[in-house]
Length: 209
Figure 1 (cartoon, rainbow, N blue to C red):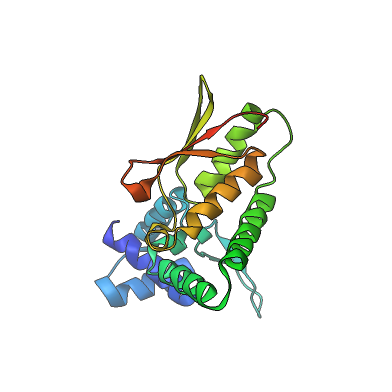
Figure 2 (cartoon, rainbow, N blue to C red):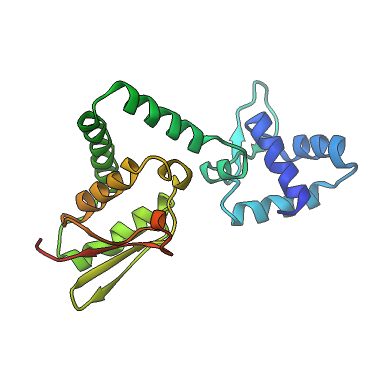
């Protein structure tokens, strides 16, 4: 990302919200003099990328011209360091240490069903629902797609959103299978597995089974 835009994201992350003038002032301390016109240009690009929300009016304690402030979107969180993988792996290891395997699987199955409930997949024939299912999976970081085949429907997942944790905790892969079943109403048959050095995880869905 262009460095000035990266600085703007960092400023909004630090201050939660900021006006154009406040961003200009904060950037001046980092990179030197910059104009409000240039800042507006960068903000429009960041809005187009879905990282900065449309400006809102800041409430004022005294009469005067309204002040418009900018904030980050949820999507912008991806541009800042996080340790979600480490947290997920640590929580799962603690579950496995303190619970029986069947209890761990019950917890993860509950997580899968909660995710499926949030997806709100509409009723209807499987092919009609799959676009909604894939859209939900892609929004959750799975990079999913589907296609018809002679034996049924092939669901492909090109990215595991918790790949580092899944490498040592295959229970997460079982959770994904439960998620797919809950989303589609069909028990998936695994055809390939990234953990076993396949390019993708693929599943066969036979309608009505």
